[in-house]
Length: 240
Image 1 (spheres, rainbow, N blue to C red):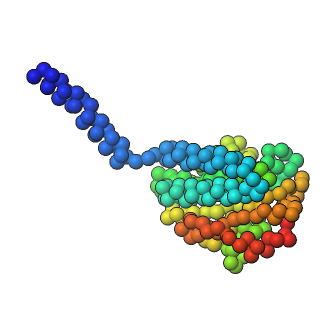
Image 2 (image 1 turned 180 degrees about the horizontal axis):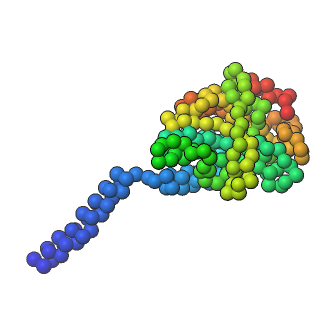
Image 3 (image 1 turned 90 degrees about the vertical axis):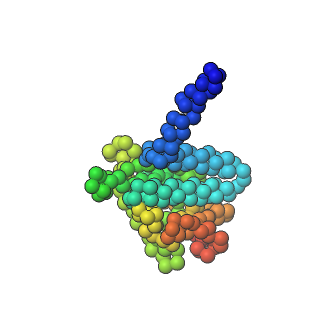
């Protein structure tokens, strides 16, 4: 009898409370901090993967950069839908090679930002950074001339000023891709094109040499992407 009572007490103090606690945790869902932490981990894993891929062989830097871009776009869309607000993938666009940090950032630094909402559900004025910046692989650059606002009809991607760190003076122009609270891209059909090459100091575009290593994808309305298979159709061959 004593042994039977002990078993009942063990079940009462372990199984039931744990089950209720789990049920409450399951209903509660994930907090914003937890979600951003997961997204940051994903971005880091993608960055680590790009380092490994870039060492496999010549020309893999662009492929790795495309994977990074797709991952960050997915992060931006998920964040917008989770918070029912606007979010952006931004890409540094201020040319300033006199400062080593800015030279490293130029058309290689990417980051996800979003609009926080106040207690009345209205957007706050400033954009909030979601995690740390991500850089394209070495010698890989975002191509502004090929990344059109609409890959069929042309157009230039929009830019906006963003604070890129905790320093209030660290404000720069950035190209961006934006999603609304329903996860819809504001520029469906926009291109995300990368080039690989050496960029001389003070020059906007990298020198590609004979490899013409270029790659990219089109961003769909629902946030998905479609790889551009025939990159020659963009007029890349012969263009720097």
